[in-house]
Image 1: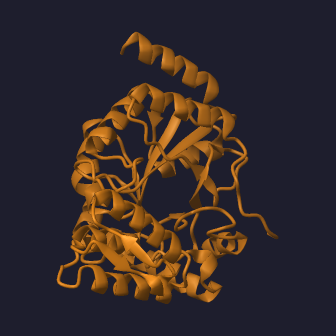
Image 2 (image 1 turned 90 degrees about the vertical axis):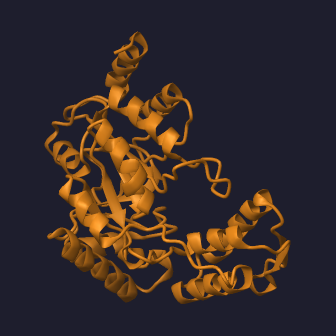
Length: 332
């Protein structure tokens, strides 16, 4: 252990103590591509960056599987500098790229999986990205989306276009969103086969067999606040049932799609998860989990720093300042 890491661990013990006042940092990752993808955002975490993250985290934090960490949090026995690692959606590179890095450092993680896209599916955001990646045109007429003519003549233009399209369709009703993405594919890349980016059933089984936690994340990734409660119930219940068939037991932890409290889910969805048998859930509100917090609205943090020391310092800052995360409130 270096002098720097010793000092960081000492600082971390002060800002993220254990015991009854313990704080749990929960990290969020999505895709972990093998190399930098020019069409993904600047804050992407590729394999090299993820490896740096895990080395720094293993050195400076006490990493616990999320279910175990939550048990310690409830009992007031959390170690100092406690941290859990999570992934959303079910991308195949979580298995092929991230898993070997996790294992190298002896780390466990939780994978929140959308069952409807396993095997040969493609999530709507990736339909947008991959259709533009394959597009050979210089511009696309997307007047039907209210976007007019969008330039797509190079990678920078395609990245800007993908963000504009995503912002336009993300909050559409599910059927409209799927129809818009399918139409975009037919316009931008009609002769291209869709790539396989999501995990297979067998990979999910193997993650569970290797001690990783599998959590629910809906079947089709609807923004829960944009669908009626009955549809949300059916989608969440189907996801839980299908994942149980793969791993042999029902998942106990859930991640809200998109995950922003109030905007993406409400207190009625918190109550719904309890009715369906879940024991806890995570949002994407930034903050740190504490004993007094809502177990169905656990905050998380999304790291993207290239420099490992800066990453650790940002995580400590979040632990110090993130004690009152945003939550969706309502009658109990």
